Length: 443
Image (cartoon, rainbow, N blue to C red; front, side, top):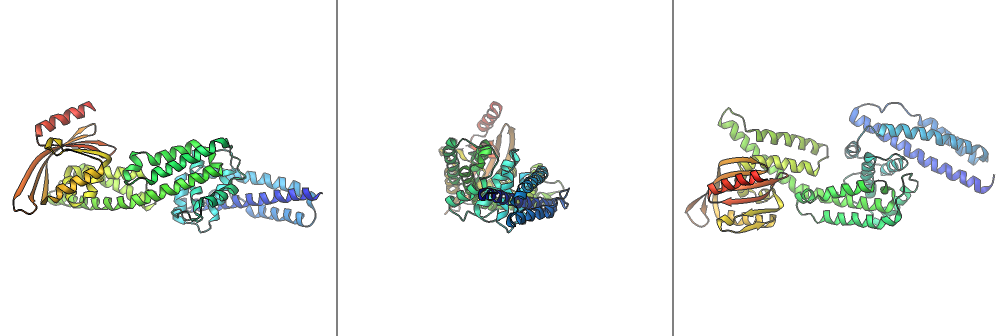
């Protein structure tokens, strides 16, 4: 047998050993998932010991000068590995991308090559569905950091990550995307990453659909993830999104905890005042908080869940304590308004304030003018269609004076996705009530 043919056999053997490593790693991963979350084995065992012995036999024939016996052995081993791959893919279909992510976050495997070989397994599968795309998406982000910790940041330059993905995807069987489309797709992901990085408030991630735009783009690309340039851009975009999410979430989490503390105090007041339990808004808040805490425990918090909890908090504080919240924590008050929210105080002759920064300034100026501010909600009505009407009595003392003042006014709020998008304050209660009813009827 010629030297060239021997070299080809040797190359085939090397490819099979790499495939064996990927299958063995994936097998151990599947067992780990079942042991961690189901306390069971994945089912039918796979005899990797026998497969390994066959690989050693092939190596022995190559090294001892019997290459003519190698080709049929390679074909047989490749066929057996095909069967193992099908068995493992069947097991893989039984758990979601979320479970894969939770496994990495809980177990935090120390071998950084695990993500590499899991990706190699997925890229060797011809059947691609949304779950596979999501799993590859997550694993590519883990692999890009060079560490198994899913919360790690990139420690390699982008060019090195791309080179790493080139070796990873070289043997992919996924359909190839037209390379002429690659620059435009890469540029699109880079622009999405820039948009996400520009977010300053948590609501912007949802209200401006920043995270949703990233997810939608990845689904559209689908098999294009086997292109190393595109995979690099996706991983880089994911790392940016994750960093921004964590930064904004940490700030948001403090506000949520402060608001939760205030609601707990309000619940005690309701319980202390009589046998009647708190209103249903408190129960809905508690249910939302329990779900949120469970997701936090599992390190699986999503932006939508944060917004849902804020909406539940808003239902309680807006109806039973919202004005007091403004005096205690201006930032917490502003967080219940959308990024482009409007506070219309023109009926008071004070103009219109647009955007969270303007609202924050208005709240700060108003609160700093008085001491001992107290608010009493004399009436609160949910008129439906995202419109609420409230009559508020404010009492306080002008700063630098012993004079007390009192203001009775009405507030008409318009809500969308759990956030106030417009609030109009009136000194004429009847005018406000009529306007609120017309607004609710017309939406």
